[in-house]
Image 1 (cartoon, helix red, strand yellow):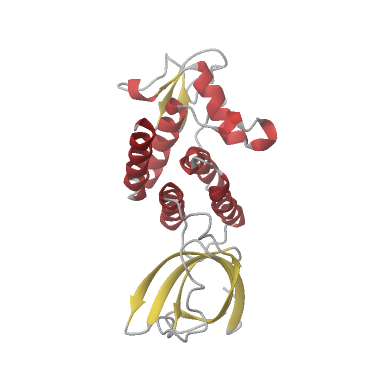
Image 2 (image 1 turned 90 degrees about the vertical axis):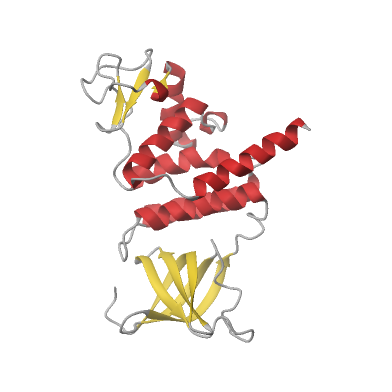
Length: 256
């Protein structure tokens, strides 16, 4: 954090909680300083100059003042409002999941510009996709990569054998994919065909090295990405259930 009493930051709003009768404490993910907690005084009053500006997923440019326990938000200007993009239930649930993961994985006051750009880009893309949940596996895989814990998918993580035309298995403890000889006991649910492995690599590579269609995760690849993310997080994200519920609702609606 800077030594000056006041400083500025670009930030995305992760969550908020009430404090007293009129204040709120906001958890923010800033490009310059990482995750921050800051108080907005009087924000719950109708005449507050920041009311309506600090909503979930909104990108803001902030002026903050350093306090003894919590920094204070002096001003907030909206850079990108996400509400038009996340009005649909599936998009809203997907945004919640992405924000929950950033909040859970990122340490306070640790600047991670790559993670900030990833979250910003993903939230921007939500409104442009007919199926927002399709973004989740690629987002999760790239988040693990930005945090330095991406699964090893180039060859067998145990023996180094090539996996070009062979099936593979997710080896969570070893941190990557393994060949048949090295696969862990009971890994049948996390098996990948050769096509699934190629799909997983396309998800990790991004748009510059694959077509848009390649960025749609196959079911097995999505299952493996989710398994690695849950392994590193230590639990399933709470928002995953919300995403799944909206997926079931969408499928039911399509069958009517």
